[in-house]
Amino acid sequence: MTKRSILSANGEAQSHINDAVRAFTLNFGDPNIDLVKAREADASAQMPDILQSWFLALSNDSTQLKKAVSIIDTVDETRLTEREGRNLVALRLALAGQWPSAVDVLDRHLMEDPFDLAAHQCALRLDGYLGRFAREAARASRALPFWSVDDPNYGIMLSFFGFGLEEFGDFARAEDVSREAAELEPFAYWPHHAVSHVLEMTGRPDEGVRWMDDRLPFWSDPKCNNRVHIYWHKALFHVERGEFDRALALYDNEILSMMRPVGTQLCNPTSLLWRLQTLGCDPGDRWGAQFCHWEKQLSGMVSPFNEIHGAMAALSADDFKAYDNILLSMKRSAASGSELSETYKHCAIPITEAMACFVRGEYGDALEGLLGTRTQLSRMGGSIAQRDLIEWTILVAAIRACARNTALSLANERLAFRPESAVNNRFLEQARALAA
Image (cartoon, rainbow, N blue to C red):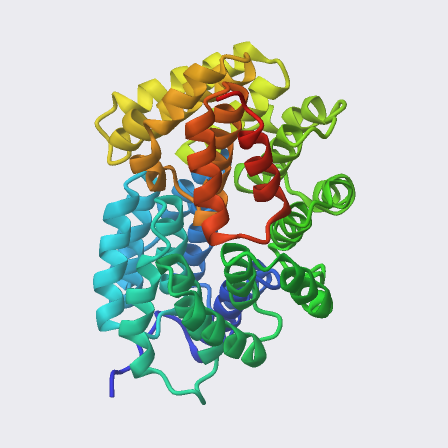
């Protein structure tokens, strides 16, 4: 039996740390409250500072990253246990933008300590920023045999496996595992989220709406830290059913009212409004209002995924100076020699430049530019469903460029996987209507 790792904290502080980890990995409640209690119980405990820094690091917000750096600079490394030391090494790499290296450290650590639930979520989140959520299926599969169904938080660990399976493309197994995890942990974010993805990827929007509605008391609770993203998924189900007004109402009411003005959450309304506008919905003054939030994030952005969305919002709000600044920042990142340089060079920058062509009405150039990124698309970060925004825009660009055969090919591709989608059928009709 693998031993559970220890912390440099007394028993009472460890109990509060465990509560913080549970809140963090459920994505339900404020783990910082428990970290305050842990510090009060044992002022010499090191893990509260490490965990708080992880929370800040995963925000991808430049201000929060600076706070994290200042916190870990005070950590007493002479007191660290093996678990805490490995977390600190990975954390410093993550704060330096070396996400792949940070995940490598966490992966090796989790082979020795499969019960470090916080490290599992940190690795999962970082892999998500790298566009490789699917790696969680392997990571969780290595750990789960060490766990027992009777262990506290087993349902959370199981939910990580379920989401990894979904991104891996094993939709049937992902759905079974995630529904089981949702029964064990009804307030957990990951199992509800994983089933939502399965229903989206397998083209079952009616079931998706029912899934959301039936479980509304669990995921709409104010303690759920990811309500905005779940509402985004709900809106996508309505889009796929052709209920654009209902999706726009979710944007105006639920999503905007709950959204925190940080990059990762801002990507949700940007992605949704972009889709709805391509379908003919009038955005009114929504882009300008949304970009006011983005402006606060533009300095020091460190995520290709966020920067692509920020650039799209700037273009849509007619703030071309801001767009130019984002693109310039991306080019600096591409030339920096960092672990993300190639992502900027071969994925983020070409996508961002092609999106500018799309907004300017240069649809042929947008089409060719975006088509050239398809083999690199996973590098932009996010899930398959989130990256579908680019695939969606490629098809719209093909239709608007009157590239009939390309548009038909892309519409056929989408329909093969989601034949009941009202949007995909609409795209096929538009493609067929183009002059041969």
